[in-house]
Image (tube, rainbow, N blue to C red; front, side, top):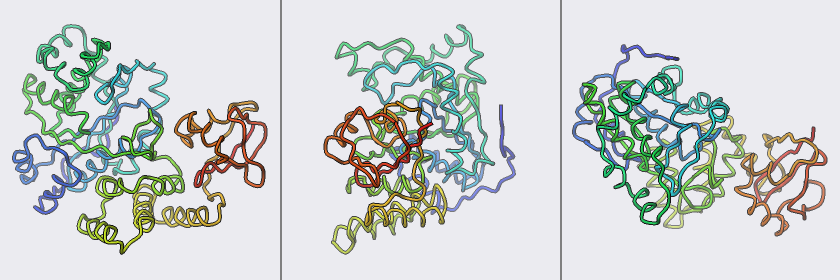
Length: 407
């Protein structure tokens, strides 16, 4: 159990304009906006909760959208509770899935969560965050406890969810384990006495579970705020499963280059959800883009610079921009090129997929077949089954680079 900065002495900012922005920017829904607005105006220091399951080692920009909103609450002086779902991560949430999510081992979860505090700290002032693991309370529940929680819900509540209803109509298996997940997330809110819970739109049912359970434990029902989902490098929803992610631990140059490669029509959502450039400034930039006053590349460079700056600071953003210009204009590798250490004979494509440099093995094969993978100072890679034999620097497509180090 670890606590950081849980003192109630902070001054809460109740500026009306800031509250308006808090409740509108990148927000899809506030379940009871008038009630939440009154709470924010009251000057009370609220407990604002976000839970993240470590089902992958990386927190990507899509999963970070609620973290940016959490930071907005933090800057107004509220207490942030960041829950790492080391227990729920084993069970698995299928809220955003069209099939059953497999259970993960505790060892996998522990390995995945090693850098979660560091990743959250790229956005939050982590020294003032109450950081928790939900195994603290969920691992202690017995069958009687779980039965009491389950009594607050009906089977009809669960199967009314769109993705579950769709799977049932298609005859696809839905496990009883999936029914338990909202109970656990809801109980997290009870355990930390949350006033507000944040999450993506796909989390709505789980967020409402906390609101249902808290009165049973003589707590006021938490307020719910959902944020939208952003698209990834290929225009689909950003997802680790699809490999179309911009990860918080990617190098600054990788982040910059990935932002430059996204479809033009996702720029607006990135500006709104993943930066804090004032919205009137964003509207001005996008107006100039639509009028042809600014070129998409110019706008995207502003966006890429700001995202890198927010995650890594001004110096890193300037370096990433310089690297991009050098890479784009001269085809040279960036200074902070990703290094991949491999055993001799390892599958090169698999290693690049694991490192996030290609989205899938099918993308790797396509790039190789198109002659888009080459060794700097050497030949093009022509075999999709290429193995690691020597140290070399690879250019993958137009803007991706990797330094292969063979052990």
